[in-house]
Length: 84
Image 1 (cartoon, rainbow, N blue to C red):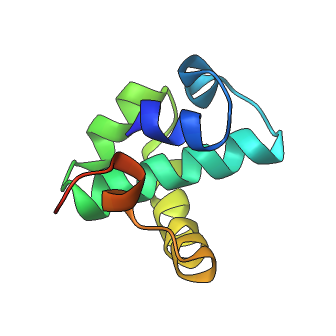
Image 2: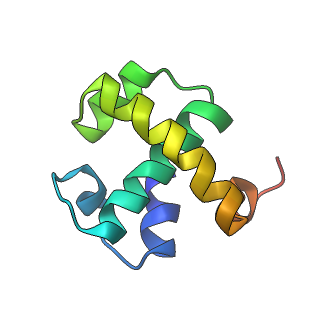
């Protein structure tokens, strides 16, 4: 997911796990959190550990991610180019 999202936003995968308030990176991190938790069933703790952020931050990102996905019509299966 991190690689696919970083490609989508034309950023380096490492940037998603770096503390940043740049809109592009924040949006990418939100999508990674949302898809990892909602689509892949990962625990928020695992996602937080991988992205080096707090669990409450993942929780907030998942909620925001739902809005981003709906508003922009993004689908993980299309981003990954796989059938889910």
